[in-house]
Image (cartoon, rainbow, N blue to C red):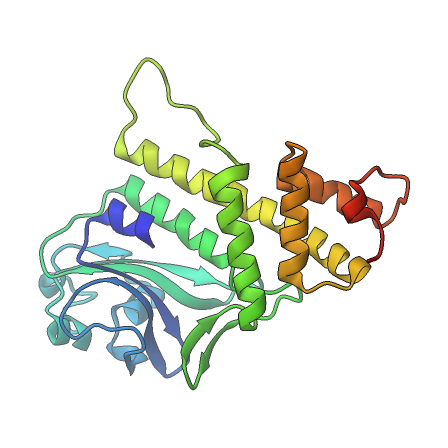
Length: 262
């Protein structure tokens, strides 16, 4: 969301949750009077409902845009500019939106819209579990994305660790002959995040192997894997692949602290 906010330059960027009847501001970054996390509206009052019904993905003059002019949210929040892209579940259903709104005129170029769509794809990687069930859900404490708290925390730790230490710099180096544009910089950031998300899947599989093998909680298994990788100068995701391979081939060489039961 921070990447989206930097790119759009709008007052508020948010993830919207949708049911057949309701729209909710699930996650909100920025400040707009009346907009707050957990706020719900009738679905048909929202800009996102119009977007999903076929309206253009952005407008910088909502009051005079036939697709959005009569949306109750426009007058309720004084919105002039809107951009939104859908978030899909693993089976293709729309389960939310990634959007920006502003009370001023903020045009959204095509390149920016394409990056926003890519960012929505990153979010999509987080909204389904391995069985394909959607885990964007309404709870008494508000809208949630993910599994139970302990699993979410470990998953977040894995992703943060990969981004901070293991993946290094962006996957495409800067071009020496010219300065990077803002679009280039954002595309690189998104590519790095996508890479980290792919690596996280491997690391979480290895965590599962270690947790079962050594009777550990998931967080403890991750800490053991990370410590073993750093003490040997290896990438966590490279060592994770070896752990996964060892589950079917006991001859795969592993550090002693990862090899046997404890």
